[in-house]
Every structure is written in structure tokens, then in C-alpha cells.
Image (cartoon, rainbow, N blue to C red; front, side):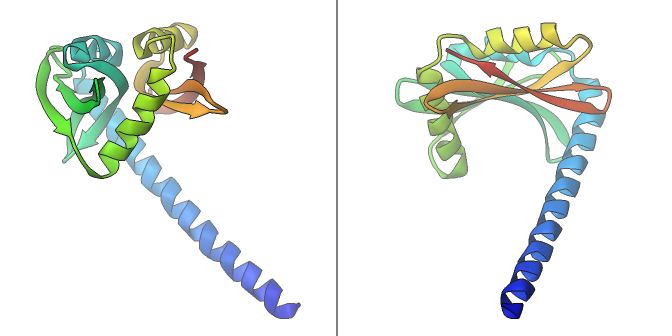
Length: 170
């Protein structure tokens, strides 16, 4: 009995440390993103529209990559997936790369599966989230299946305050 309590306390302590570390990591990422977003001249929704030439947009986000702001949109055309980098100052496609392996491919397949069941576009739900959250800017829109139904988690930011809302895609 006593050993079980000690193990439970140790596991709890270890998990709380990892949770705190993950929260610090997320806080750092959020701070970097907020700082970098000042350079962005176009909305994520514009990036979704710009990327449509490479296929159906299946996710989009602003991120800081190697210290620089980047707008990344995953697209699907038939069985193929691509990452489209949209210039955040002009709204034009800067480059397109095929997604062929690794975690990116796993994520793209899951997002593609959700979007295959969607009746609403990511642009539509991102516009709706922005309209319903005045003063906030959409920084990511990520689809997933929840209980067999497609939903999108839309992350918004206002100043340094982040907010996530869930929007139905069907």
C-alpha cells in the first residue's frame, strides 16, 4: 500500500514537471509569435485562398520557423499533400513543397480525412471565428474528427491573449 502511494506521488511529480515544461514551451512559442506577427500584413484567411491553387486547404497556421514568421498552409490534391508557404506581407505563394513522410505526412493525412467529411471550408470557419471575436486575429485553423464529425480548432490572438474556439465543419 505504502509503495503504491510513493509510486503514485512520484508519477504525479514527474508528470507535473513535464506539464509545466510544456506550458513554458507553449508560452515561449506564443510570445515569439505575438512579437513576429507585427510583420504580417495579410490574414491567415488570405493565405488559405492563395494556397488553393496547390489543392484544397486542409490546415493553416502562422508560426515562427528559424526565428522568422511564416504562414504555412497544408493542401490536398487527390492523394497528394503539400505545404504551401504564403508570403505574409503580400499574400502570394512563396513556395510549395510535397509532403511525403514523417510527422507532417501523418498530420496531413488526419487533416485530409477530416476535411473530406467537411461541408464548410477552413476559410469560412476562420472568417466566422474572426467575426465572432472582434479584435482578434486568426493565427491557426486545424481540422480533426471528433466523434466522427469534422471540427476545426481556430486559434486567435489579441495583443498577447490567445483564445481557441471550436467550429463545426459539417
